[in-house]
Length: 149
Image 1 (cartoon, rainbow, N blue to C red):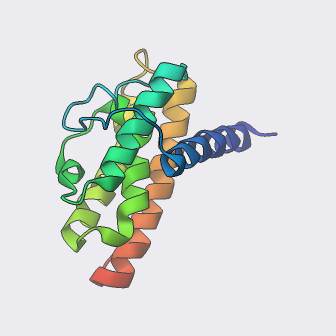
Image 2 (cartoon, rainbow, N blue to C red):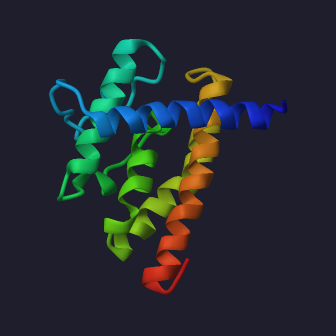
Image 3 (cartoon, rainbow, N blue to C red):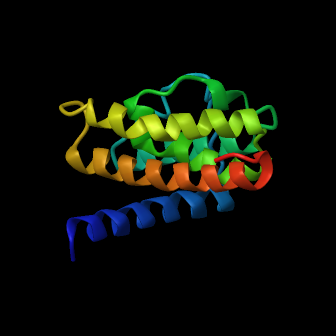
């Protein structure tokens, strides 16, 4: 298996676990996604996974979508929460929000790569792969509804 295939498999498993947990729900309190504490938790400890799941559920459930235009740092991209929430909510985003999300996804690889030393190579690679996939998804949605990509 190539490194790219390995990273893609790991990313799929991680995102699958997030998606299942988000769909299943749990008793944790909703995350305050106006802070970055849940988004900065990037390791695979049960506590961090729980924080990310809670943040994802909160973002997806937020009808105001106030989080869409909040700034994101490398840890937020590495956690995958914001990018995955953008992907899940893409059909509900306005054209302006889609454009903002696509710019964020397009900028994420450079932000992640500049964080060598704070993030592991695997965290950076997973974030870069996810950002590319989210950018493509948002671009397709933009082209379909907004007349541009």
